[in-house]
Each structure stands twice: as C-alpha cells, then as structure tokens.
Length: 277
Picture 1 (spheres, rainbow, N blue to C red):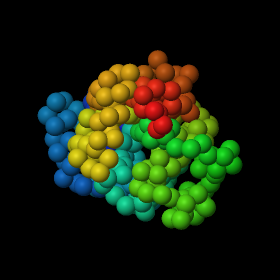
Picture 2 (cartoon, rainbow, N blue to C red):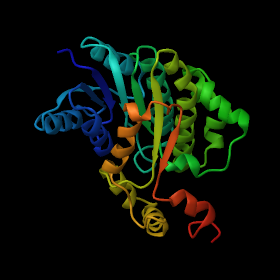
Picture 3 (cartoon, rainbow, N blue to C red):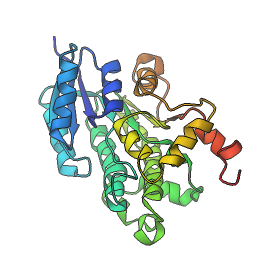
C-alpha cells in the first residue's frame, strides 16, 4: 500500500508531538538544520512504529526547502505539512530570527503550496508573541501577508533601525507567519488543501528552558504564573489542536490562527500581566 507523505520541519518537542499524533501510517520526512537532532527524533519515532526519514535542511534557505520537497516527492505526493522549525529571541540575533522564522516560513508555505495534494492539510507554528506588540497598520499587515517572498526582508518595517531588539524581531516574524497563512491558504485552497497556524504560549521544551534561563527568564516565569491557566503548556496539548486542524473534523477551518497560551495574552491586555498593572 502506498503511503501518504508528511513533511515535517523542526526536530523538536512540538514537531515530534504533532507528528506522532497525526503521522501514523504515513511516510514522514523530518527536516532539521541539525541532522543529529533529526536522526534522534527519527529513531525515537521509528522505534515506536512510525516511518520516519531524517533530512538535513536549513529553513532559511530556499535551496534547502526545495531539496526536502524534492526528497518527499520522490516517495509520493506531499499531503501533509507540519512546520515547527524556528529560533527563539534568546538563541539568535535579529537577522537570523527574520531569516529563519519570517522569510523561511514564508518560503516553505509558498513552495509546499505549489505541490500539496488535494485533500491535504498543513499546520505551521507561530507564537503568542505575534499578539504582543503594538498593532501594525492595515498596510503593514498586508505587506507581511502578500509581499513576494524574496522581497520580504526589504520591507521598511523589517529594517534594523525599526527593530528594537530580538524579541521585537520575533514578534514581527510571528505576526508575519499568521498573515502568510491567511494569504497562502487561498492558493492552497485552489489545490483543494487547507493551511492553518497554531500560536502557542509558553510550552515546556528545551527551547523554552533556554528562555527560562535567559535574560527574560523572570518575565516568562511571571507570565505563566499569572495567566488564567497558571502553568506553561505541553507539546501534546499543541498536538491536540493539530489533530483537529489536520483531520476531516477540521474540514471547514483554513487560514486561521489558534492562540493556545493558557490565557496569557488575555491577561496581558486585561489582567495582571498588563504592562502598567
């Protein structure tokens, strides 16, 4: 029996959780900049009965994105996409955050959208951070959504003099992710496929531990302590959402962002996490 092909980028806890929940019975191509990370996740999943092949790829490189798509197509039509690759504000400088999280994600959604199989579905991971910045103008939002991918990093609002720090760059990148999902879901829809976004809050992963121990550690710990849920989330809880979005139960959902942050954003605007509270 020919297997459906699932393309997964980002060999981390969230990517693995989503792939485990939705990837059974499928051929999974798992890409990561660090091949050893991809091979480690592939081994764990293969030992649990999945069918995973590790692939070295850098999300910031269009050539690498095209290469992993080609690899997947050698096996069959790509029917599913999970994009969980990215870097955090404590892990990378402004330029890298914009190149990976903003540009790379935009290219991936664009290129997979050109070949996604009918009935297919994709999920990309953004962040609550896209909701934690001053509102952009309608024109700026439109620019993030529709600017050709190779021109994105030339936009005025993404120039160094207009970005305060790595957190601001990350916020802009994640806002762009949500807008690109809205834009690209139109093109995916022309192929009979759907595309959505999950915006997690604080999720316990190695990346989050880096944040807890980084310069904004106290800020993040305070955030989940004072959000309505009173705790950080887990990767499996993000997989719960992906399971809906990538199944027939979510057939009427496309172009949407699901904010899953334990109420932290609500608390930021209207509760004890308000900046002036």
